[in-house]
Image (cartoon, rainbow over all chains, first blue to last red; front, side, top):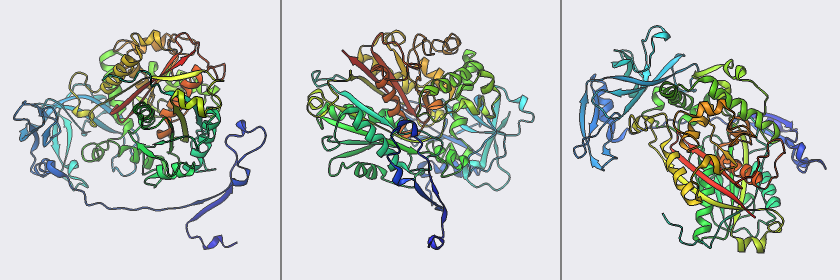
Length: 175
Length: 407
């Protein structure tokens, strides 16, 4: 046959017409029902730049929760922005107390492939004290799942074990 | 915004849809485009040689490991060396592509266009990898790294809606029941099913409050639509005089911050689609719609998750904020109800091959207005007007389009 020369060959098969209902006079693609499937492995590593909000991550390592304040309109963004998108003014860094209110959450029993999280895990939307908009992170150390309540006070907690991304230097815990 | 040339109008000549399925192992994206295009050409009575332009509608470069797939779709159907443009807006891609066809034809860049959309969402990768690919359509620096992914985002949006308005899990489970049921008379649907609210409630919990059957589908498939001016259609379409005339009478687009966290808080906050409210306002104004609940005969709504359909009813102006659950209980959106929605089965029952989805919505509205669908799901034509709503992200890109029958 020669197909054994194909190192990534998965299978060769004859497919059925998935639209047979539309083809009462016979399959118009009858000549094209023999199908080959191969494996293709892709593995990339990026050297990603965290841009002008890098200082947020650098200061997380120092147990400081930073955001940005607009010197023109005064808006404090929950997630820092180098440029205030409300008034297009270059912002200033500002430290927040790291406390807030969990205004919504979800509890997941499923996690996408590359995320190393034990399930169930809680994704929280938090209105940070001193900020006008929200911040997104996991709520951990909540004890029993029944303890998770809408509008519960939470605080930023800092990682004590090595992390795979600077964003994971923090998470939320009940305050 | 003012439409200057009111004499130059844009018509929907025909559409074609490939079979939607969990995995089309018989073929790949370019084959599905071929299937859908052949059907669209037959339906519109046009020859590809006469059509002047394509718009390519697909979302992900990851799922098919093929950048610039539009070039392949375009040459596959014999359109070279004619012009092509790609439109991309996540789940809203197809809706935006319809809007693009309207804009290009209205502006006079062409008199005819075929919009070709497809997505390979299938099982070339396992579902946890698929969810990772989709998660990359949220902010990869700030949201993805904390294990944010789409079901979780939508779940916390719905949780906020439930908290504020008292919307119940049973109420949005009814959306899943309706859409799976509607899909039963759609032979191209991925997941037709006769189920009950209990079946939805008892299906596996993925992310509270969403269970497995509250979610839309990862589907393989393609859909294509031919648009043109009347003058072009009279010259090149053999079916123009034979089939009811369907016109694009409204289009709107709205957006919101990529990250839910950045949206103005507390209002409209994280439970409503501000971009959808904005897009609907534009589209209704253009089509002269004052009371959408009474002035549409059918509406395809972006039911990425069952609760999203309820919230969308509110943001599309079918009812006041918080009232959608109650209306769902009353059967208002069932076939035979006041405003039947997702008669095709929607993303939950028909399927969600992203780049094709908005186009498939358009084709459902086209065929409803022509009274060509299976009588089981045919709506009554009181206004001869149908709408479609398509969005990407968590309502990051929203496109609302309106078709009307002219006779």
